[in-house]
Length: 108
Image 1 (cartoon, one colour):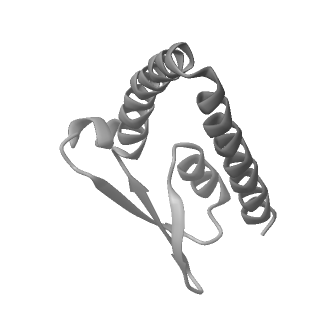
Image 2: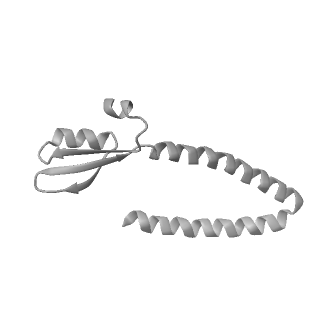
């Protein structure tokens, strides 16, 4: 939005719109605002700027880290294939358990 570009150093933006102004509400939701409070006449909305930038930075770091993990795995298999396979089996089981727990979270 125009105001956000002019105020690019800000971390958060808030908006208060009339409750029956559906066009404004939809527009703010579309550009990343979330509803923080409602009363009889108004809807209060907030947008945290920078969250996506942080997520993108995390993604970049994780990509590098995944590459490091694969290098470590290759080295482990070269040095001790049987022991490496046992450890990878444990990791696989734990990952499966984590996946089950995440599914429970998503359903709620």
